Image (cartoon, rainbow, N blue to C red):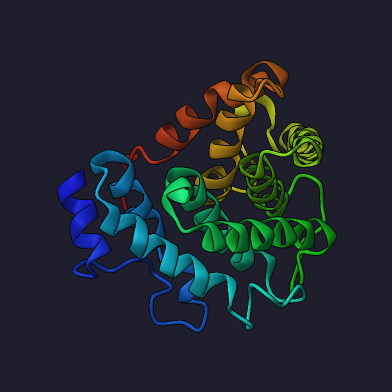
Length: 227
């Protein structure tokens, strides 16, 4: 895994399907890769590179600093910056750490205020998992009394979403793709929330226990014939 991460961080492998689009910066996973590499190797060069990319992301005017832009894209960038801050923020210069932290909090508040262009506001829709997962994790990473309160509110909203989203037998009516995608946000926040003592999604929404199972079952090829 470390070998692959090093190749991805150096740009040898494609970062995402969005690599050729205008929102490439918000979907640049090199930030997560560098932060993870610092975590497992302790090499400062990875932390430095992650800090530089985090500063680039939070300076973006098309998405990060545009509250009316597509919330899913902003949330992707916020998740990356939050993970990087949590993994290696303590090794960044004080000014970088303070700047990134302030930007994370503002971005999380903006997501809660509006998901921007094309937003789906239905409780059971995957947009809500992305919204509350990214914002909640950012508040937890900020680690202040007020942010803990905000994270708890995000957790309660995520629970409300999951209860509306998951049907009988844990099946998601939005399909397999929209089960996997929002769990990139729900999962990290749920793990962090449990560690922080906010709540355990496995107990609060028992249906999530079979969510992974439904995605596996849904991808099993079924033999068929013409007609």
